[in-house]
Length: 289
Ligand code: DHB
Ligand code: FE
Image (tube, rainbow, N blue to C red; front, side, top):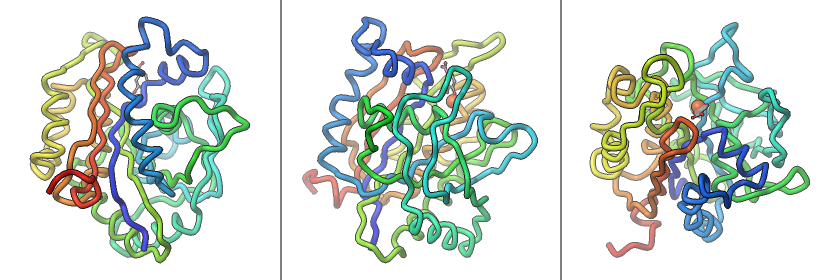
């Protein structure tokens, strides 16, 4: 049986991808941001996931205003990095576990989560930047070390799904994974965030206190946290802070009891507070019981 053993929360700032692709990670501006991912790269090497279930958002790359699925599951064999205006990122093509993705699609829909099935899809920085942060610099001729099942969530066009809906979707993803009859170690990623606003008068907003309590409550009060209303994300974490609803899908897919394995919080990185957390199910974390 497949099992979700751990979750990763991770921002997806596109400038991080650019810094990696242009070899700028050692520059004084970027070095402290990347330093916080050294432990994460060691951890994921040890954890050796067979599959990453990667919850992310598209930024008007695949979905423009003409059609906007709330939840879209990648069921294609592979996903090519998209050209977001300055050429595709020079990173490996993302390969799916297509049989598992089909099973998850069936399980979610029969479990009454009516996701959109994507049989063709490119992926933007929302998906590739968290992979780069966790696995380091890999080029077009390399392979990502594991398969990736992408779940794309609308957080760009109002209305985004509620945190509650996302948390419950995480539980449904867990049921889907655990009913897939292949021994697989699955790690789930919830990406995007933390506080940021890219436009108008509050552009550049960062709220470290609010971000910190969001990360604290992923362990201490995940259900209460999932009830956070949209307007609180907008007020406290800026208009793009609402990307954080995707972290609830990750958290909902884990056990009630988790251990925080690692956390990193860094400002500045472009206009966004970079937040990163690794949570392992207590029974899988190796921590004292
Ligand atoms: C930035 C952050 C994002 O989440 C995004 O999708 C685009 C830009 C930024 O901070 O520059
Ligand atoms: Fe974004």
